[in-house]
Length: 189
Image: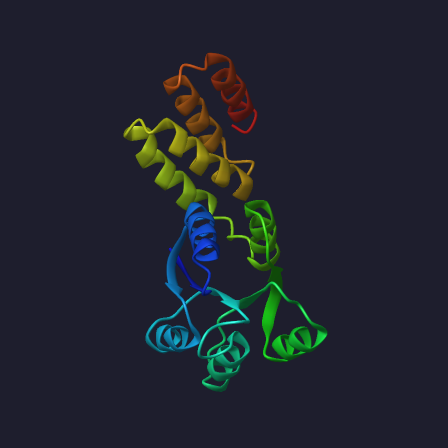
């Protein structure tokens, strides 16, 4: 699970980011000021960080400057209600990856995440199918379908994947879709 650090003194911003990021599959840690953020950056490794510019005790820009000086290359998204050219230039020089301007919506946050997060690599067809086969045996149909579709994207010519999808849809009672996957699988045998 990817870990993210949220650094913002506004409770509502921390709560919104936390809920949205947890729904996106992140493990979330939070800090309310720059000193606490530095302590967390020193003790843990994060895959991503959201850093407010205006913080009590130590500014977000100073936090970013210090972690970069320590060789920490965590991707940082700068949060600010007051974007200025000076801040943008300074944060860009310190290798922040983008800005998120307050106020923002959950949709805007998802759009920013999509911009900055590389897609997960597709699994090898055989690996995805093996995992899906275990899910099929456990009659976890929806999860199996998700894995099998990933396997299908990795190798659309593997008949076993189509037959696995047939079995999953039969398990769900959807005979029409199951038959379509059966016929598709037969075309590759």
